[in-house]
Image (cartoon, rainbow, N blue to C red):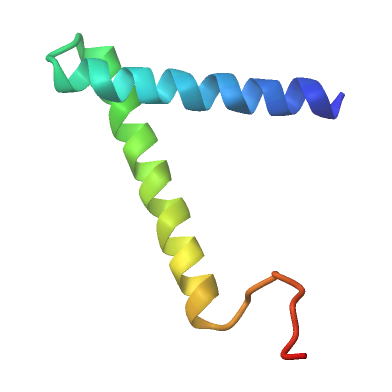
Length: 65
């Protein structure tokens, strides 16, 4: 079941990337909409990762041995 979910997420991510490239070349309106959503979600993920690293939330598991 988890494999289907991960495959679905991968397909959506690849489709979003394709729409971003297509929209940059002047695709139809729905492609520009999907590209805008994809870029917004990517920006949110990046800002979330920055906030986590600033607050010291690293999960690398390594210590100062």
